[in-house]
Image 1: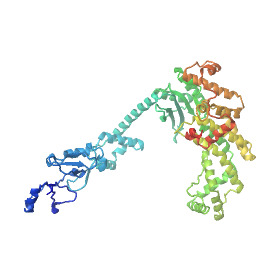
Image 2 (image 1 turned 45 degrees about the horizontal axis):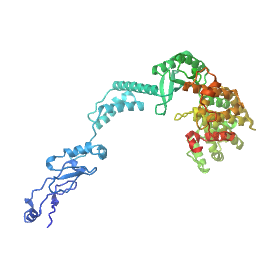
Image 3 (image 1 turned 135 degrees about the vertical axis):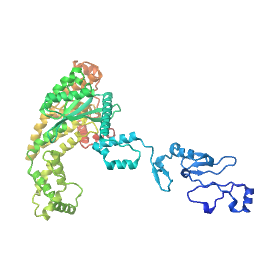
Image 4 (image 1 turned 180 degrees about the vertical axis):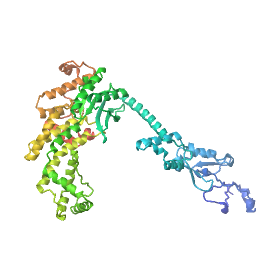
Length: 573
């Protein structure tokens, strides 16, 4: 007969979910059991510990102790009743590599009172306080948030042992956090390998209080572009040039970055020219500026475009006025909106595209209004037939005129949007985009439409004024861009000023002097001709295959389409 162990479990004692130890009985004992009463057999007690649910019993091997196995990782432990379940508990909570507290809903199940209770992980008062302070800063919550009775009730429900703190403690922790972040950012700017570019602007609140903002742009040690607002503070009167210069210079000294200043970008206010001159004199005392601060002042390109377009929109076309009245009429009441949506549906247009209304102080809103209204052109014509009160619908010729204006403004809108990006450098994109604006204005000057020609003439005068004052550093940024290089700049300058222009020669000489200063190959007063031939190391022929006018125009078209902006030039050439 077989000597395999026999497991006895009484039906009335077998409970689902409860493990019962097997009784090992040999063959002789099994024969004797047949003649005994069932009540004479002493059974082992069931396994009632909650930790047994994570293990399964292994078949007993003769001569060895009974063992169990973890259902997840397969680790085995002794399963003798005298051993207890402490080793099983420690395995589940701390040692099992594949089953942590997350696998059991980040909780331990306790069945002391036959109800399902949840006991969370080890609570850290310090971590709780840190996260709560971070939430106050990130979501702009008041300090009194930590004292709200309802909030404290929630915290107590989640962790009965939580220690609440007051708004004064929250304020102290936030100041401590600010100090730590301040020191961390200062160390990050000090350790960056290159110079730092800055942008600054003044802002006046609704109660006429002045504020100054200073933003730092730099590439960190991991070659990641960083943008950090290092100051936004109250600017006491007077808001004079001297006061502003002292304020900015004091901020540089407070952060300890006065020797790492490269450029500062400002709007085109006339007072900023005087301000930059004073700031250049202050920073030149420690000889930290590149080329004696020649490239320090950068004019805001987006602001320049805004001035150019605003000059044009002072005299607006009659067709634009009628479109503005159309949008105002539709947005005048809910009944009109409903009628317009019905007209949109009848003309098979997408009703999800919003109809925009412009703001007089924002020229780009005028472009967006024209763009959306032109899309719903057929809907407006349908509304004219169904609503007798709608009398502002433009005529066919007026729609055509609006399309010309919208197409003309599109170049400026796309350029402004591109210049306003913060996720990638935009200095290298300035030159090709401004050249595109210049070509657009030149084509409009030759238009047969008198209105378009007069509009382009006014804008071109503003364009010439600011084009002459742009920073040469922006041309150099295009040269070091492997998608363009020097031949593209030569092509653009030849188009603008003719072959062999002084402007192009100036760009080349500034490129050489900048290269020499960074490489330390020659003094600033050395001759550019000597430097170019023997020291500069700049290869005049090192460029992409743009040796023809058609090649440069192809690159320009790709730039305007936004292809090169995605840094995919290796896939194109």
